[in-house]
Image 1 (cartoon, rainbow, N blue to C red):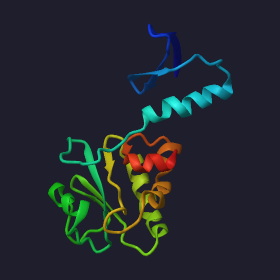
Image 2: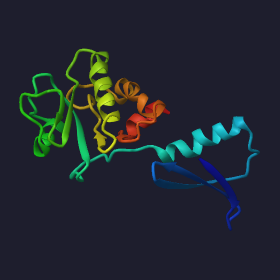
Image 3: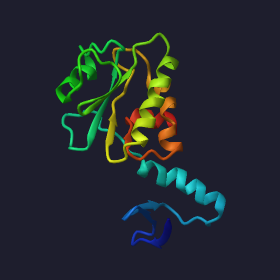
Image 4: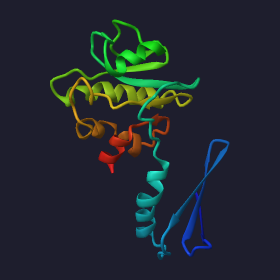
Length: 182
């Protein structure tokens, strides 16, 4: 990763980051209001304040179509009765009635209909392991568990912390989950 810093016309500072991922060069630009002294401590601070929010992969609030490599990740019940909410929409992209877990067509089901949010964790962990093993796919996670199941983003988001900690770049989370994880 290479950082370049320069001053803009309006006297703000521009930080440009160049990264290489495989054979692809990624360029990220962002502005900071004033120049700060670059030490190891405040570079980390700059990264967490300015860079990480830009690098987050946020899933759309309303997913109406999927590109070829995109997977719609939705909350289900173990019985796979996809009768409402995002599960019903998932049927349009290949979700299988009677299958409550895993990859189905262009969808991935995570069971959410439990008494406690903690009961979802093993299924979310399995999903994240699956996503890591399929970097060619882009997983668009809905607010699983926050509809019919009745949980709040603060209950579910912590189970997705590995997306940030482990840098799972092909998992896109709802903005509400990222706001909890900050």
